Length: 153
Image 1 (cartoon, rainbow, N blue to C red):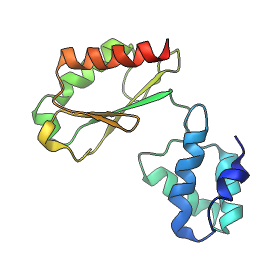
Image 2: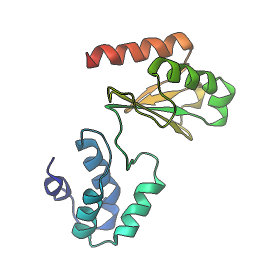
Image 3: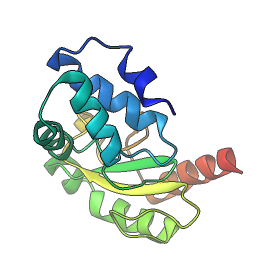
Image 4: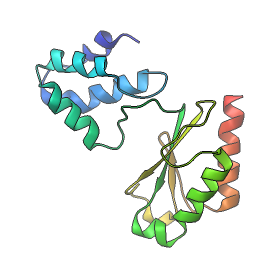
């Protein structure tokens, strides 16, 4: 991955910070932002490194630690919670053999929680990478994960 090539697609004004960080993170194999990435962005944009770090730690879509090929985010908002998100989380932990915040040994999946996905009408819901999944049941979760596993094989 060529950080300079990614960064140079954007002009330095600060409103481009989040798109730059997203592009860098997506370009890395383990979908996270390294220290040297943040330094390169700070230098290019002439923004204090502390401000970049603050942005990265504020937004849950950014990660400072390596993650799996597929990021699973389970919604834990009130509607999803009431409709069974806890059961869905437990099922995912059992299916994947990891806890929330962990990555599978094969580096294919990372399990995370998110405050809201904005699809409350189909609660409980989760997002895998950028794909939304709603009206989740234990059976549906297993089918979805099996589908992603077949894709990886």
